[in-house]
Amino acid sequence: MINFKRADHIQICVPLERLEEARIFYTDVVGLQRIERPAFNSKGYWFQISDIQLHLSTEDALPRTSRHTAFEVTDIAEARRHLESYGVEFWEEPVLPDRTRFSFIDPFGNRMELLQFTE
Image: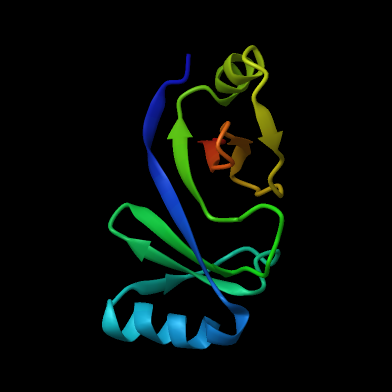
């Protein structure tokens, strides 16, 4: 069983050539506050929206999209064991210092990230 705690972030993608246009839209038009993002996400911006984040990234024609939702869970290891028991496909995420995380792919090709903050 997976015990969801809260939504953590939503990632949206834009073409690389429109990245700055998207940054201006989300800061100047929508009014979001930019926040620091990890170095591995070199082609994008992160914004704070209330208690969740919006991750703006770029995407070329890839076999699989990087668009996804992310949810904080209470027990990441149990969530992974639960999904593994159903043979769910996983997508390993780059390591971040303050959380344990992974993504899984549903039967329809959608990606969902699960994470747990480390203390």
